[in-house]
Length: 261
Image (cartoon, rainbow, N blue to C red; front, side):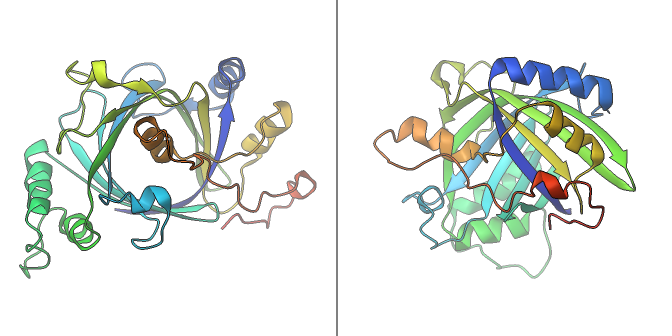
């Protein structure tokens, strides 16, 4: 599945995050992915090279992130790659049973398997790129996601706020589950702030313009992966902020023809 959309990120303190959540409950509907209420847990295993080329942004492997993700208590796992240019995000992903995904991931231990079969198999696009880029499990990221959604003028929009952001060392290809407490003792807080994301296609919805008018929310950008790696590489003078790209002036917010693409 290939998905392309605009994603804008903002950092909120807990007080402002609570206000924004209340606003979202009043103006948007609950995300159907929520297990109960309007929140769910996310556990992601991120890949990088042994030299942390993605973290250091050396350019050797590009800036596309590769990760394995589990939602809450699900036994299913998602293979995902994600790239961002300016504020436009392109994501490729597929979902399979834990056995299917693990069979694909274990092939990464054999660097001679890239493209060896002409028969398509589950996750072969992910496996081949990970082998080509020499990626390996690097760190796990855990957080609670608040999610609301809606539609306006023919496009879907989604608001999420990620809180309780923690990191833990990678343990092979294991991806944490909320059913297991095995890695909780190793988790450390990656940030005390909460991360608001506004997601939409084409142009910013009026609802989101109203939100940004009502609350003092500066566009900051944020990388969960880089924040997590910093937990284990505290001597690395690398910021966790992704630069905010081409922020639209408020004077232009009333234009229906403006695109963030």
